[in-house]
Structures are given as C-alpha cells and as structure tokens.
Image (cartoon, rainbow, N blue to C red; front, side, top):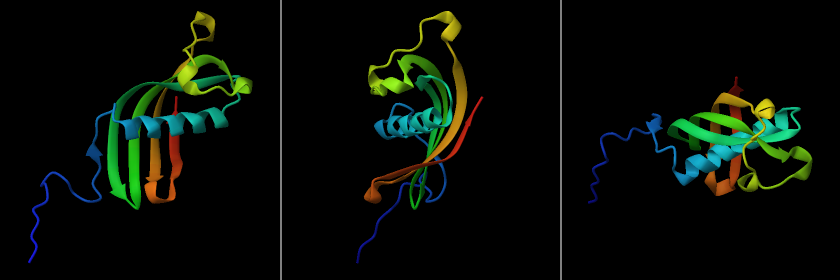
Length: 121
C-alpha cells in the first residue's frame, strides 16, 4: 500500500505564484518578447526589463502568466543579435517601454513554446 500527502497549497489546475526570477519564467518571458518583436514594425528589438508578477498553472504542460515591462534596445532587427547582448536604448528620444501581459504555454516533452496571449500598451 502506498500513501502520499500532497502539499495542501498545490491544487492541480489552479494558477500559483512563482518567483519572477525563476529560470523557467525568464525563458517564458523571452518567448513573449520574441513574439512581440516578430509582430511589430519597429526597427529596434525589444527585450524584457522587469517581470512584476508571474503565475504558473499546470495544464497539458505549463502555462505561465506574466506581467512585465519591455523596453526598446539599441539592437536593430536586421542585425539579429542575441537579446542577451543587447543594451537598452540610451538615446532619450528613442527610449520606449511597454507594459505587457502574456501567457506562455510550455510543453516540455515536445520542446514546444506557444504565446497565445500577448497584450502590450
């Protein structure tokens, strides 16, 4: 006979707060920014600057729900650099930030990431 007591604060299907600095959260945020960059006509790339809230929900895989700020970098889209090597825009007239909410669906066993929801303003 096998018995297991589950942690009472973990409810399958319920979103749970997760540390915004968690590596999986940062990876999900990067996928959101990549989608944003692919959807805009801006000549510069944007990247995540601050994640203010992160939730994770166990679904068919993991669904991350993120509130974050993104900012314009000094890297042009045509250069296709790694965002890790892009600094935020220092020219005051070119600086631009957005507040975004995104949902990122991660299916680890298929190595698949989808961003079905992305709202930035």
